[in-house]
Amino acid sequence: MATMTAAERREQEKAAFDVYMDGCPTHQLMGIIGNKWSMLVLADLAHGARRYAEVGRALPGVSAKMLTQTLRSLERDGFVARSVTPSVPVQVEYTLTRLGERIVPLLTSIREWADRHIDEIHAARERYGEGAGQAVGADGRSLG
Amino acid sequence: MATMTAAERREQEKAAFDVYMDGCPTHQLMGIIGNKWSMLVLADLAHGARRYAEVGRALPGVSAKMLTQTLRSLERDGFVARSVTPSVPVQVEYTLTRLGERIVPLLTSIREWADRHIDEIHAARERYGEGAGQAVGADGRSLG
DNA sequence: CCGCATCCTTTAAGATACTG
DNA sequence: CAGTATCTTAAAGGATGCGG
Image (cartoon, rainbow over all chains, first blue to last red; front, top):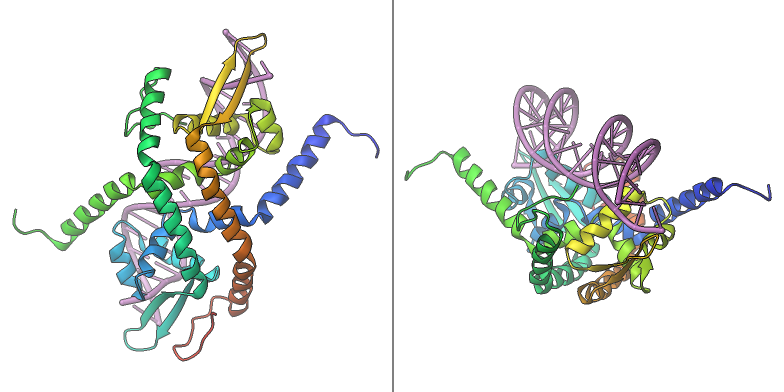
């Protein structure tokens, strides 16, 4: 068909964009490290091999479910290696793979940028609270 | 109280860790750029000033709600400036602030890392699929 | 044109209980 | 010790309609 409505054309553009997003390496990487625990697990393993419960203790507040899920996800994506020693009870050790070690500098870059600019972000939040007359404090969450 | 149960001690550690997480600059930064549209909006504005609907067209699939929410969030955090021209109808233009411009190189680093390693991630996923989540033998190597 | 409000669906995360 | 299974809650995201 040579003609289509504007709505149809937007539909197609949206679909094409969705495909692009799904295939976008950056978006995929954010999906891997953008969740609550991945970066923390990676940061902990950067210091050396750790057993399941050791990682858990390093991350107070993580549930067994989320710890397993995060570790599995990182293993699946090639950042973490899991090795089982069939003793009794079994011993499971997690280490970074070469890929895992290679992402550490990027994580460090992110942390450094955050450390250098967090004050400016906080200052902006306070200014925004004043101007808009919205009750947004340091701990405020008025965004929805 | 000089003594407390292990459960109480873990409770305290968890609470302390939650406070630490909330205050962690890296975690806060990930909260800002880790959502679905922020990086895309930032990337679009990196090319120059844009009106509300222009950003929307650059990001097919974004709903008005999410576009507004993302823009507001970035404005609140000091990455984006919003200027209103009181014409009829009103005209609203968005630009990066200095802080917004300063994060662009970091975003570029992330994109470059992702582009360079996405193939290795995909390869790891395929290897993981083969093993069907099988446990790894202590002697054998299953992951590169 | 810009954007807020409302309602609804989907996904992430946490609590709890149980197993080899 | 190192998980799995199930349930519930919290949050993100999306569709739609209204208003300045």
